[in-house]
Image 1 (cartoon, rainbow over the protein chains, first blue to last red):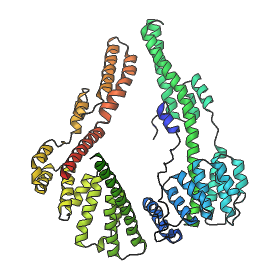
Image 2: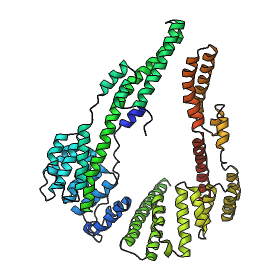
Image 3: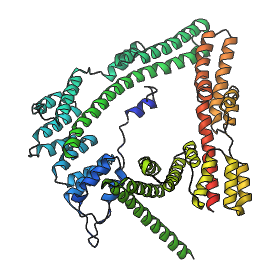
Image 4: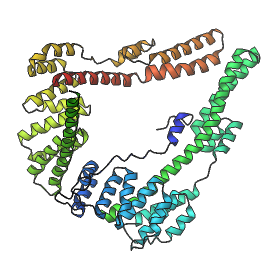
Length: 288
Length: 252
């Protein structure tokens, strides 16, 4: 919820979503115990994760009798990914050589903003899921707002694999939205608001804030002019009302800058959320 | 002596960690019973066991989730009261005192632990007389301390009274026992003074815009608009403090 585009409220909104700290540490493997193989637990772990019982999955996967393996690393990475402990998830998924781990790792890295690393992993993939690879490459291009890169990757879409078709079409829509989205400059908005209070907010697409800024600064300017006319320039009344008016005027310029910034950020956040969703969902269908 | 103290502390810590870890894996294994396709009766036994473990681990929301999955058609009368107890405790711990009371009314098992939880639930729901009687019956030796504690039990504050008092800052804040009353009170009086002064001087625009803005920011926003919400928050804080003291006394 956003209450204001001015001051700390605006700054809070611009802060990136904090990554959940990774506090999970599995117990060291103890070969004196009866061994338990992750491959045998895969169905149960998926059942736990599908029911949202992430804590239970992590408890199970942290036990000292779990024999180290690629599958164990993959399942640990998957459970941590579901629990949003993305940095730890990245560590475990990177350590597994299983194919699903590779694609889940790409999504994890995309969430972490490690687009270059995600691209490198996909470039080295030589398996038979080439359309899934193209889907993820296209998604990463969109996260970087690179429409040309998207078009190059999307050339590999066949729209014939029912596991991927919906996501491919969704990414096409997002690419069209990004291409059509006007690029607004925060500096231009500030300049407009300096000339006419509220104009920058209007340029950012916020009619309510534009009216609010115009009326507030306009009223205060009116009071200052009235005081000046009635009591003279050196009267304390004129100085006080003029000072308040100046503060609101500067706030209006800063607010216009923040408005555009937030507008751009909102647009990026919304498209990024959609892209991440659409490169992630096919993995759930194919591998779980 | 100091060495013995440290030995005991470390032993208790290790023991608690081991128990917590054992309970966590036990809760997982109960879930496995359901995964393996248990009969309704077996599923109920597993879910009750799981809920008990999760309550011990203080994972009350997960415990409620397990209890919501009970197959009610296959629940015996004995298990039903156990489930009422576990659900009541979980709801109480998540702050839903009214919900916990509903579970208590549906029947708790007999036994000292359930009686102790019933005292807390009754107190949480504001039924102080009943809670006191039960607590005294549970441990008559603590009767004087319990009576003293219940004599100081928080009374629910009236939002309408708070609203009326808030017209004269800072009476509303004082009634709600809020500590940060000074800044908003000063702002309210400054706003009122500015409005009155400018109106007397016939500067109506300054009076309305300047004083009005100041009054709106302090008086309306901080005094009136949120009074109901803050009355509830103030009550909740007082009840939580009282319940913590009561629980400590019961467990001594």
